[in-house]
Length: 482
Image 1 (cartoon, helix red, strand yellow):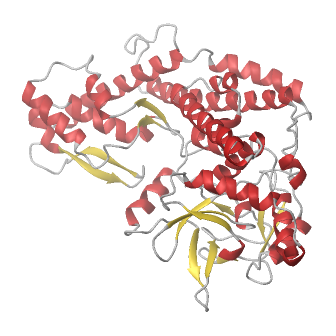
Image 2 (spheres, one colour):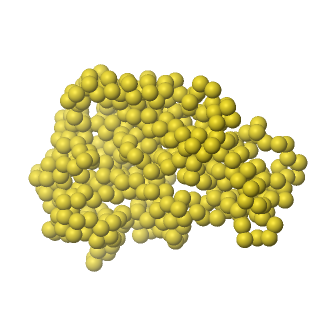
Image 3 (cartoon, helix red, strand yellow):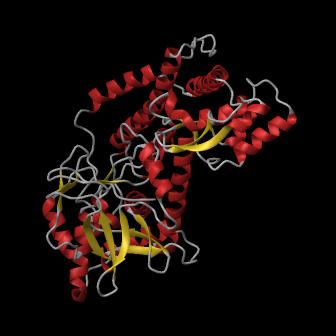
């Protein structure tokens, strides 16, 4: 799922002009663009209730493509090309209003989103966490491949296509039209809302409540009185005048947000650190298990592989031991004996917002509390040892990263380059691309540094809590690692 990001300089006057140019409703806006704690954001001008429609934009004034047209090109690529052609088209006298509309829209776009997919490879490697590094490199390679094709096939400048792809990935919305076709769209005005992460419990509860075809997103396509499609944005929660209005881009990790959008929420309740990549890897990590019989192992495997949460991250999260409920539940299955497995059932844990294997204590024959505590201790110990191993794989420590970051703050001062709002013009799109690469690289490095610090903090918070629970370093084989 993709949506908007606005976090730099921008003006209310330009927004007012754009609002009118795209025939946005309500006619009298209930929000405006202001400086906020996020840089810039959409702020309520009056009391707004949860579910209230904040803005509607006719689809005729939206840059969009149908994603499943069977053209052989992905929707994001076709939308990026359409964005370039729309913004770079020469003004025609009979279509002057349309030209002015897109000039206004261009002024609201940054020349650079800061997404990790546009960093150089050396800086991407500074994220240090292999899954995040690999994901960013894959998207970077894909951007470069599509930019090279655009140069050869359409004479679109390479920098312009790379920029357009980054805009699509950081500002576009996915919606379904009345025929059930999936549309990817760039929506003027609606793409200015900042992101606010859901707490896992709230996100999980919403997912469980949604019916077939429901998304729980703030945006959707609706029909006006004349059966013409409108893009509609509604409030997720109530706001008072002067308060910033947020939407949720999805249950995105910090790596996903940094790779596609160019920012990291701090804190990010949706973040997690996977200790195992999948259930098969967990089942293979049997170094601490007493060797179970083959039938018992088969039963454990069947319970885990066929579980409803088989694809859920096997991870630790912000909030310490308790927040690792799904992973600990799976380890309960592995440490239970054959006659105990029948008392572990997968249930939705409301406070965690996820499915967890938990004991059915009300059933006759359920293992006694002392045995359940023994299994829990074994599960926590395995999580801790795995977390220590992961922490040791980082090339730098938390303390070293903090020292580097403190030094960079002093060096950067106010020299961080602006992201270029108001500078996207027809001439810029067709120009020879000039950029302050060295200044940009320092800013990107700081973002990579902040990302890896966030991961290390989550791991260390988990381990600190484990030590307070009575585990000792020798029991966890910690040595000099932590």
